[in-house]
Length: 152
Image (tube, rainbow, N blue to C red; front, top):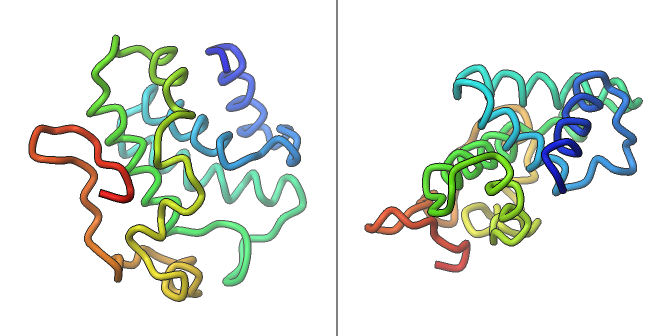
């Protein structure tokens, strides 16, 4: 994906016009990377969280206690995307971050289960608000500042 394609994705996301068939797991990460790269962290968090809720509704979805927006997963991935940027060892620009994004272990859908049991992560409480992990603490970096793999 190119910078221009990421920009188009984010524009479509913001306008609620991005095709829902293309609103993939990876597209969520591209959007989160865009906001955390281009905005201060507090503003990025707000844009991501409110944006997902708004987008879900724009494409006919609902944000309920059983579907749609999920606070714990969203916050976990925001922290991970920020950590990815902080630990990036290549030339620090959006294109470089984007081109390496898909190869990151945290892109795997099972990644959150390194920290959470399925029962807790899929609970109404976790969907509605942040819950602490029950499998192991969220540790994203080793002692040298390198991002850890989920299996670490």
